[in-house]
Image (cartoon, rainbow, N blue to C red; front, side, top):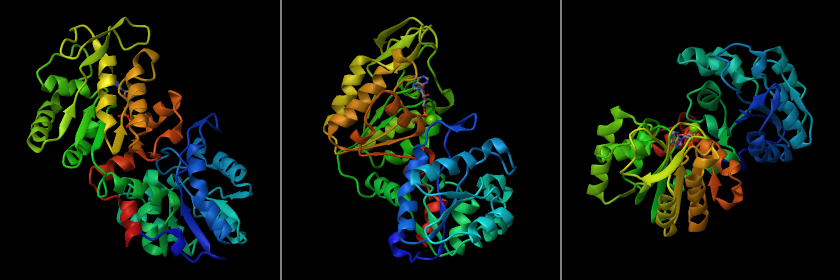
Length: 395
Ligand code: ADP
Ligand code: MG
């Protein structure tokens, strides 16, 4: 994959597809993490004398102009962080965009309005998407793909524009890809994977693919009850996906056959209701009372999981171990996060809620080797899928 070092950008118009999909409340940015993550590429291009045109999406306006999804607040914050004025175009490929781009000097920045105001951006119709990609590509001389969070989407700005312009990967994508390669093609063993979160059905593809790659798979979170049930245990009122039982049994069988170790919790925090103030107790994982639901792995399981991470050289973690948003059920997630840090392994955290849990529980993000910015994109990569936005940057 070419990087921006391979591109000649001085004096040229460079279209950067960034991921600026930040959370907004009443028009104010509540977490500017994604804007900050986009800075290195933009700064490098500016320092090399490029005219930088940034494009991005925000939320799901579904092809219509919806003011509440405007990128205008992002333009302001981007300018503050870069320390330069960012010219905001209030359309994507219209008169305002052309005026903004036309006025750029070397080392200047423009931000286009939300790509998803244009139906062509997300269209499933190749011709419609292509027509929009033509208009977007016409604004620039060169394309840099840096919106890792969107690379699993076959969208015009991600997939079709790089077909039309000389292109390269920005720093963010280059970093994410090199991390993902260390979890797939270039793994240092032992390789442990911790999976949790709410639904096993969201993660089946990942489990399937990692069964052939990981040495050890630790399961917690809401998905664990489908595993416990598959092993013949009753799970009370816990989250259970009956229709996935056969698939999970098949995974357990395959793991045994190939020598992959599945580690399941030995105890569970079982509550009378899905609430922070509900009665809750630690029970054995094979003795969950019929009227209770499991909302976290228990303290013995926390220790067990940390111990099973201790010897690993590589750890990938996706999905909280319990309902960490409520303090009584946050212990398991805390124990696993600490276990990753203490392992000294190459540690990667993927998934929006997992990354949020790390922050919310007060861990130093720098204590992990990498926290992925693109949950969905990382998971699809680990499922072994071809990601359109990476494919487009390859050729
Ligand atoms: P990620 O975004 O990291 O991929 P998911 O979206 O799969 O993670 O799942 C996160 C959610 O899973 C959290 O909101 C958490 O409350 C929930 N969860 C974890 N354990 C349980 C459980 N035992 N029962 C119900 N929900 C759970
Ligand atoms: Mg999530």
